[in-house]
Amino acid sequence: MSVSMQAGMLGRKVGMLTRYDDAGRAYGATVIEFADNVITQVRTVDRDGYSAVQVGTIGDRKRTTRAQRGHLKASGQDQLSMTALTEFRTSETDGLDVGASLSVDRFESGMYVDVTARTKGRGFQGVVKRWDFAGGPKTHGQSDRWRAPGSIGAGTSPGRVFKGKKMPGHMGNRSRTILNQLVVEVDLARGLIFLAGNVPGPNGSLVEVRQARKKSVDPVKVVIVPVVSEEDTDVSETPIGEVGTVSISSDEAVAETNEQSSENESLDTQDEVPADDEGEQS
Amino acid sequence: MVDLRELVEGRPSDKEDLAEFGVGDNVRLMLWITERTARGEETRRLQPFEGTVIKIKKGLTANFTVRRVQRGFGVERTIPLTSPRLESLSVTRRGKVRRAKLTYLRGRTGRAARVKEANRV
Image 1 (cartoon, rainbow over the protein chains, first blue to last red):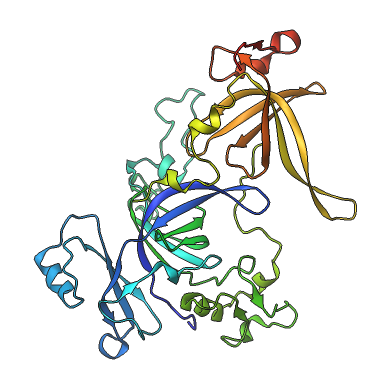
Image 2: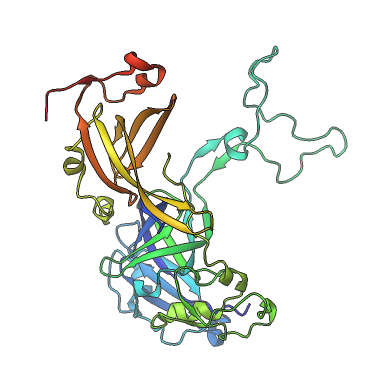
């Protein structure tokens, strides 16, 4: 993969708000707050076989264990509360040293991010809720079959139930990644970003936000010069870094995302409104 | 964590905004609408909408619904209080009602669908 990977950050889902696009249409936006993000370990190709940075922030547990404290000592962190550590794969670890802090200015409005978080736990659930089965008939002489799973397979042949058969069981509380969330605003002063759309998990939960792997800067929000038309761009042949220059190239993260514009067709959808518009009920 | 209420744009608080009008009042809204001319150009203009406030929802996503009967059809518009499309709102008549949501108006027409006028300002 030729995509240049940037270190992501660990934040907290604050909640959702109603925001409006330029046409006045309402859409839901998720607010994510970032506390201190410190690089606690750097993985290099030479030593570890891959390059990544481990980022730490204040986690859900009140204090670290002694082992964790020993690990954090290298980064100069004696914070008792830095219990959340996550590795982010990066293409290079230049300028990313142990003990350095990551700032919210890695994000820029108009860029896309992938968000990984744990979904809300739903406990042990039946097939209707868990797998959207239809259940059985309510009437026509039936009883106790409303939410039953029905047959779970054939008879003597194969004589067993196939692996992976959808059955009742634990639902939720698992890590899910939402791809290509649009960053609509970055609040540097308060350490917040606003994403169009939703993010897994309850409010207050930890989320990993990283630069989107499959989609680059949004052409509507970020002016790209020169405008590349569909005709003279062969998507597969586009040399990295020659698609255009982002006007707000002061930010390293955005400059990098621009290099990986593998989706050039999106450059032509300038008049499309990116956000899911719920619209005002009228 | 930040308080979400601090981040809601264009609105100081429920108290300040909702003191101005209540359920049962007749209000006149000026709403920005976007139209497409015959030549395909988009134009924006203000369109008035006047009717009875039949419900107000409070909270972070506060909105209100205005109902009127137009050409024999009941028309209801629900507008978020923070909507940029809402240019202005003025109360044309104060209503005297005893409930928070006037959904009962939907089943009524003509004289039965009236709201008594209140003496308050």
